[in-house]
Image (cartoon, rainbow, N blue to C red; front, side, top):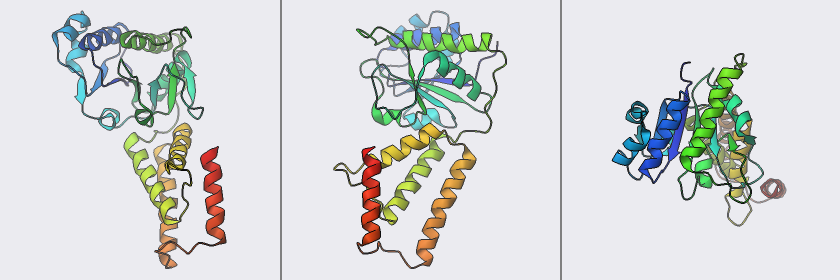
Length: 266
């Protein structure tokens, strides 16, 4: 059974022994791509000892300095979490997530993110995720050891490959995180230019909600290009009409402000 094009991404792991145990869990389930984002200690003798026969996975592990580097070129990104997050994330059971991830590999690389042992993934790190993976566990103590969490996800991926031999591939290639970042930056620029502003106290909620909307939509590259073309057309029309500066406050501005406020509160 060949290895699927799925990256196991450990974000800021602190214990080298866990890195080795993750490598072993991956080899058990025929996964080969391990990416470490700013690990606390690696390489390390504890990692080598805990790998126990999976030294080849450990030797191929790629160390990067940032999450965007780890996800470069990826399509579907799933993030694991034991904590309740806001309701606007799509949350899948680990078994359902495994099916989605395996279908994605027919059109490009996929990734599964795991956070640090102490804090998990931050909200900022979750921004790159299209969906969250929930591993069922006791409400009294839902937090799993890092290597145990990887083992469970890896097992479900392996199970899907063995049981679901006729997985229907998903059409099109999802936009990678870098392409989406450029879309969000472009969107924020146009919102500013048309004075469609976030009126909440923090001033950041609107763009976060827009980002989450597009992450749930799982845009492909063509769709990103369409949206960016539309945004460029808006900018071109404004320049053509001589509206380089924001218009004076008026009825339209008030309407835009109310619309932005309603969107921010939903």
